[in-house]
Length: 195
Image (cartoon, rainbow, N blue to C red; front, side):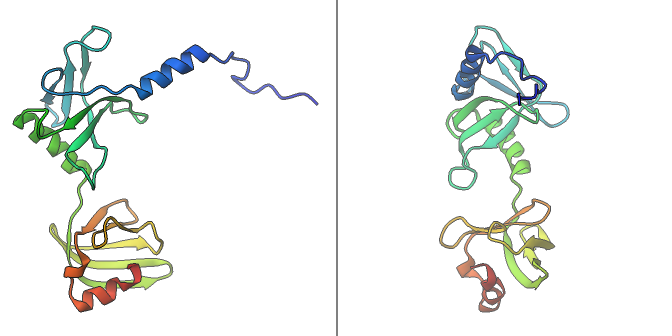
């Protein structure tokens, strides 16, 4: 019995192309005010110009994504600047946003990250009810009162440190408790299911 001919299976494997793509993925380009210019777009996004790219040609990106490499442990270092496609490619990295770019650029990039990493802090737990594999939270956050639902599994409430918790709801929203030891005894009892 022979193998069925799948679509694309007859294309020859191109080792050189694969090596070039791998090298491009592993390449790291550091961006700063000396080699990159960020500007706010009319729509409130950020564009990027690199006057002299790696091949000697200028590069322009109408819109870029600003992504923290270490959002919880080092939020101001190794900021990844990416294209906006679904399979985005990294354009470059800002080593330290406080040192490598101007105050104006830093403010612009931080605005983009605050939208991406919007994480209200839970200041009070009114109630947590468990029902059919879900937990229904009624809390007060730095952004006001909020009710949300999470799955009753280990990935919904994650310990970032000994006292810091990150909670992810069914819709992908994130909430933070910076130090659960600062909560009242009643609040800790409600939270006990997740500690």
